[in-house]
Every structure is written in structure tokens, then in C-alpha cells.
Image (cartoon, rainbow, N blue to C red; front, side, top):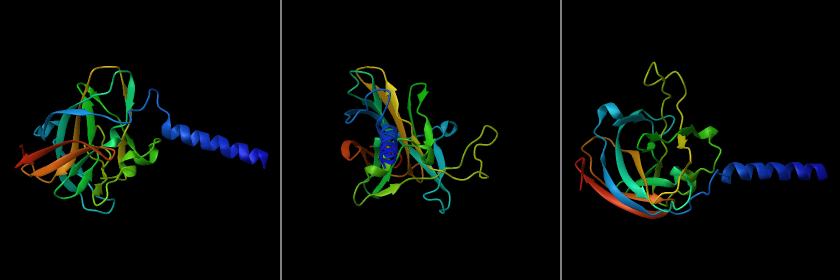
Length: 206
């Protein structure tokens, strides 16, 4: 019994480390300065995303709604979990997770959900009365943009640490529009806290 107790204790500690430990302190709260937003118009830069609402759904073509913001509270080197950041379509009551995150020439890595070792913030901080759009995508290869022979999958963004600076400028995109000329009122949430909002009318910032 003593050895069994020790074995269970060690395993619980390992699980706890897997969910909570990062190379640098994890940011708990953020403040942003919204700099720019709109619909991605660069067709060669991946303005569209073909995804599925669930594993059995028909494939949809989605246009990327993006925003650029300066994230504060980086007085020391810290880790940010991008999965805490979501975009909510207020009119249609849909909550989107990021397609991708970048800063200059740097791009955040994505990890298949079944291989993600940290706490799933997107699932944890769902909002009451708001539908989660946790989309599936097809794997990509160098030879073919999409590879439908392999199973579809969901993913999360890998948390990343950044050096101390006055503000971290990030670009985030979400599969929120069905056409490039759609309209919508959007709110940006960090976990369950409202940190920004914007409006797009007929595909243009409003």
C-alpha cells in the first residue's frame, strides 16, 4: 500500500507539472491596445481557411478576421498562452479560437489537441450562451496544400515566452466570416474577461 501511495503521488505531481509548468512565469491577465483590425485580403498569404465545424460536418470555406494589438505587462520575461485569447461574434453568438498568431517574422507553433500537454484554456473558459467553433482542419504537406488521406484534427497554439519589453505587438486571425464582405460586431476576450471590441461592416473596419 505504501508503494502504491508513493506511485500515485509521483504520477499526480507529473500531471500537475505537465499542466502548469512553463519556462517563465505564465501571464494571468493582460491589457491590450487595439491597433488594427479587418478581413485578411492577401489571397496568397492565406486569407481563407477550409475547415470543418466538427469531424462529421461538411467542409466550409472561411475568411480570416484579424486584429493587431499591443499586449502589455511584459516588464519581465513571461510566457503567454494564446489559447486564452478568443474572438466572439456578438450577433451570431459564436466563439472562435485563433487560426494563428504572429509577431513580425515570428509565428506561433500549433500542436494537435491530442498531443497538447497543457491545460486546454479554450475549453475551460467557454462563455455561457455562446457556441464554441472548435474547428477541424486537414493536414498540410509541401507537395499538396491539403492532404485528405490523413485524418482531420483540431489544434491549439503552443504557449511562448517573450523578453521583457514595454509592449508586445501580436497579429491574431480567426475563421469568423463566410464571405469577404460579411459584417459583424466582435469582442476580444482573455479567458472570460472582455479586453477589446471592434466592428466590421461589409468587409471593412467600421
